[in-house]
Image (tube, rainbow, N blue to C red):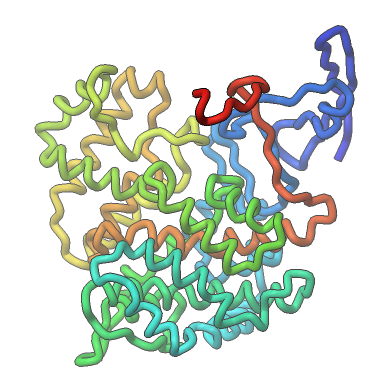
Length: 428
């Protein structure tokens, strides 16, 4: 990485700070010695202008609508690759050859079952418990069942726990769904693909054989690919922050799931689907468009715009194509899809949305697809967590292997009372 210098002048002091360059993207000012040299901290709520780490996994250019995993465009991966192949890529840095992919897939398949005692663990939850609440508890409890792979200083332990998390997450997610609807758990069937196995464990029943619909399997695989990693988002940063303290990987993943549960992060596709249901039919769209423009109206267009992307979300293009494939295969005639297409068309031609760069994002379409397949909205964020696990695991491994990594410790701008003396209770 080449280094230039940035100059900062404050309180009569002038300091030089290194400017570091990555392989692609904006340069960064290295401010690690800022406090020692000036007595000042930076103030950056939400860390929107702060690089918290070095990473070689995912690159995003929000202005241009670019998303790369290890250098490969997300559109190419979603069209030509599989989730298992993308998982290998994120974990290892390169696409696998046939033998490597076969061995990786076989390894993941061997870890799909969960400890039998976990079945009784589920029964401790209320039947109406949110599946994400169950996911937080169960994933956090994995360290109690698999404590033979929690030594983060041991590369082999890290590899085993990584494979276990990727393999067991579909089983845990499917069991959360089954528990919520009162159906028996289904054991994994390792002759199926990663995604096909998950669909069977979710929707299959012991009374009859479950037939995996190829178009649905492919759609789910794409959804998993599109959600596999997204740079230093809130949940990934949470996983890294938890991991920086030396916490075991299962605890770190549970922390990521808890963060993802927030409606501003993982719940966006559910919010977009609910918005489409509220709009109802295409003829009502102009009314809701006007409401969205009104600053005094609480209504907002969900599924449009993105914290990072200031252009068309590259994942949304793949999702729009996938919706058509799923609806055709399942012979679904859903008015919500027609409303979504019409809403997209109107919004993209409206100067207000063009000026504010409010383009459809991945959540705009994914909720419609998941609903058509049969998932209740309470499962949407669970599916997000399932897919994002591989990204969390890859980021966690990268962090643990980074010799420059330190325990996370953000600073603050204190605005409370200055020092004052204690007053005895009887004098207050």
